[in-house]
Length: 572
Image (cartoon, rainbow, N blue to C red; front, top):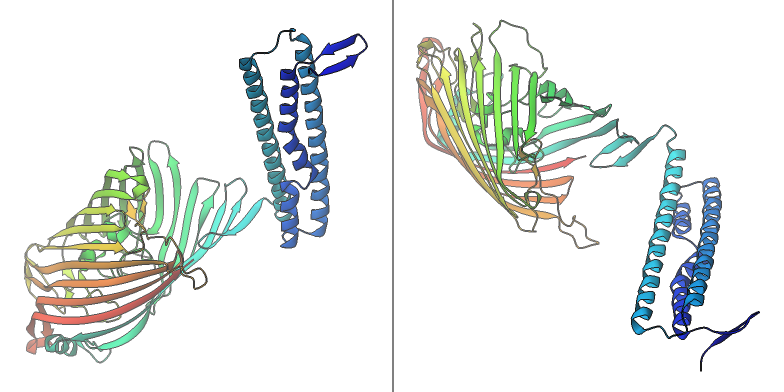
């Protein structure tokens, strides 16, 4: 039996296909009406924010009233839209001929209704999201009338809403524990080098505040970055980073001016928080000279090329022999550095990666009082005994080259570097040092060294890569350590071999090879525990016994030391 409607003009038939279409359309709109009958998402979020005391009672009332008004307006708009659609359907029904609609026509109409219903649902969702954003914006505006907001992001970060200004207050601290046992040769050397003011120990245990560095960094006007960092570790106070950088200068790149690390060596440029081992490898002395001269004042220009698959850096620095960042002296005490890096293989944002690099440094020491010295402890900073040491070398300068290699395949990493320092000191006469008698002739020493290290993250993380700086950073645990959730953080096994040979051209500072095994436990992104075992083996190191006319040289040959050390590091 056909359905009919009564009108002033008599009886007209309303085809079943048209009736089904109207019913489908009404059912499609029904969920929207039901959604508006209860609380909107914006109203629910306001209730949650009120319960958490994130907004005041007045803010809640005002925003709730606004949300209800917007909900009513939306409901009225949807009602008007439904009425228009029904009128349109009636017009279509009136125009339908007496002949029955085909199945194909019915299907087409149903699809059209379904499509319109989906579009209306999307529009409703967009309106709700707009309500939420508007509510949050209003709350933040009342909280921060000056347009700044503060969050925790590995430290306290205050940032303007337009992103032009940002201040990060943080820092990091390293606390070390360790013990060292040496053979009779190293014990005798430590005793012989000791003075009334300094006692050297090759056997013993101890602790050290290795680094304590409060840091402030940020952005000014969107294009100038800065960093200020002091170091109160190791019983001393010194300037670490104190620089400003102008970003994105046309045709140049980035210009960084101030007290900073020189652009040389992959391991040296890697932050102390992110190094794989407690201390950098033996040949790091060729990057910094003396172990406490790793920051100098100068200018660095750098940038990225080929969609950040390549970096380059040029720098000029005044070499300083103190931690205050100050120098006054004759011309001829500067360092000039060049560094290039490339990524021939870079997959999944560095999950698989091959880094290659090359650094070159020219150290000008033409000033009459300028010298160079290279030395190192056995990758254990608590001890005050330098197992290899050249003493101060009078020279006119040195050329140092440094190829780099970094490979990452998921949780596996391999890093390696080679260093070659060619010192210009032909026929110079050495001063009396721990390694040389006064008057020893020096003939252009040619020192070198290397290291190779591997690591594997047992918990599945990888070691990320900073494409802007051309360095590796630290792993971020997939699951932070927590008894409640069962997370164990990230665990990493490590191994390294390193060598530095300071025997050349009349200098017998020693040839040392260290073997290190370790484990790193990253409890979360801000807390790390490191344990290292180090076996040090030293050959051909001479040292002076006595003084004046009675002074004589003694040598280390196959001297050994065993070291066990642990570090607790936290940063923010």
